[in-house]
Structures are given as C-alpha cells and as structure tokens.
Length: 213
Image (cartoon, rainbow, N blue to C red; front, side, top):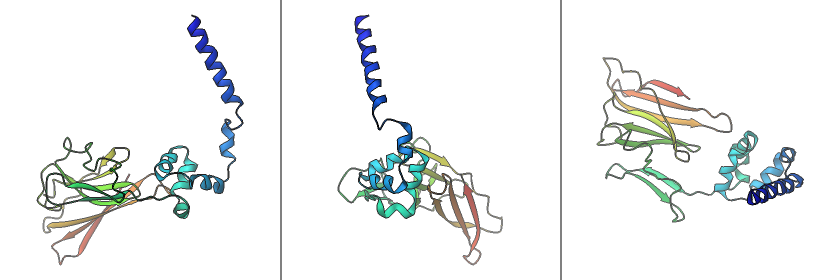
C-alpha cells in the first residue's frame, strides 16, 4: 500500500507540473500562425518532418503544400528501382550510403500474395506496381487475365489491389498497358490510377481506365 501511495502521489505531482506548464494548453499551438509553424518545421530533419504530418490535418496540409516545399527540408534518401533479371529484383540505391528506409522487396506483398511484381510509377510517397501470381519473363509479359495493379505505401505497409481491367474486345489484342499514378495529399487523401490501353489496331491508344480510391 505504501508503494502504491507513493506512485499515486508522484502521478498527481507530475500531472500538476504538466498542467501548470505555460505551453501545455491545447490552444497554444492553435494560436501559431502558418508562417511560424513553417519556420519551426524548417529546422527539423526530413524524417521528423514527415512524422509531424500526423499531428493534425492543418500540419499535414502545410507540409504537403507544394508552395511550402522550398521552405522545408527535402533530403533525398535514394532511388527505388526494379530490374528484369535475378530473384531479388527490387532495389534501393542510397545517395548517402545509408540503409534503405524500408525493405525494397516489399515483404508484406511477397511471396504470400504475389510471385512477381514490377514497379510502374510513384507519386508523393505512393508506389504503383504491376503484380502477378506467376513469375514473369519481362515486366509486361503476363497474360491479360493474370496481372493486377497494386498501390502501396511503403512507409506504412498498407496496400490495395485495383479491380481487374475490362477484357479487350474479341477482335483486338491488348499487348501493352501503360499506367500512371496521381496523388497529392495536400489536395485529397485519395489517389487516381490511369491505365492507357494500346492494342494492335495501328498501335494507337484505344482506351483508358481510371481508378479512384
């Protein structure tokens, strides 16, 4: 009982110190102007800056706003790329010789869900992959009904598989499909994927499928 009483006294005293601190009130940060917040954020490391996006919607919008990017640290960690040969085809090239900020093999997607993947596009922290349940010969050599597009966030490990594309008409053979990812967290938390179809009909773009989260 005596130890418990000491713990209770310590907790009460600790709370009283926090409550009496002039910077502990919830409304203090709300009174900061955007310029003042940006001045503070410009003095912290890039990794901490991205973590501070979780503080509030207001802070996330300030950090993600393209108009503020020159004021904030934008340290380039490296490049993520995919090769067409070898078992381990997903790589991260660090510009500072440091370790990759995440596992480039994306273990939360492979091998349980997909046997093979090829990186297609990237936009503001999200990655677009072409995935298959079979091993591929080259990034676009899969059967039309076998591949799926997958959007993932390597920082959080969250991912989503897009619905299958509509089948090509019987008189056409879809031999190529180019895709692009559009995502701007300063505008919306939703992303869009544009899939441009190219068939053997005079090698023109013959259609586009748009996916929105």
